[in-house]
Length: 326
Image (tube, rainbow, N blue to C red; front, top):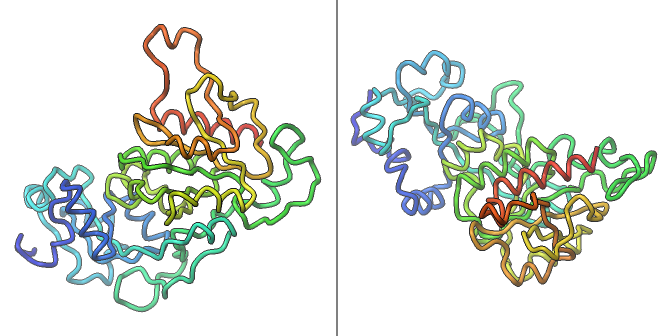
């Protein structure tokens, strides 16, 4: 049992200090996975483990993952864990994980992944457990753009049955997030994307980090399974997506926008979601190929509701895209 001042515990210090953690995690190339299920999903996705901090009651259930970590397993009681992290860790286990290379937007759009480092479960040691798949943050999902998805029934935004699949490795359905600041919202949208068949997510340069602790926690590890990339150019980023063959659909509550159920999705489309509160910027709205909206009940305005929050909007819109692709 280490002392609370042990430098090996530095990865877990002040987890509620958002600005401190953002700079620290970027500098050291790490992120925090919280809870047994999320930790296991991070390991299965190929992220190497730096260390684990847990209370004794979780040691048995995580025993298979702790083998080989030696002095990088830190067992402390609940009070000590709370003192280090700054909050009660109800799920009893935290793991400091090494980040993997994030693909470029171009790699996401072309369906290619960056070269992976030598995969291993424990950071700094060779080899990996048999059966643990290697994966980078940008590896396409197993069904992304497969012929089974590409050969859809006839209808708006669908392929005619029997039409050969084209560019099967490339994503068909994207989410593009502009400047979301709430990590919980980003995590929830990734979970939605994973559940409803979105092939990849593109982030604006200032969008919140999907691997920040709260994003990872809220997503329940979906940030490990949905490929994503971050734009380097806010001004020109949408042009790159359009050049790859995606129709840019700007989700907005504006009355002039086309109801989402009536829009032509095309072979490939990218659904754009704006920041909490203000929504999409005027520039991105102007850059879009079409403005689309979610139809609301006629009584909504009288009830004081003129729009949905970004997570609710993303969930409904992703469901609509999935329904159109069935």
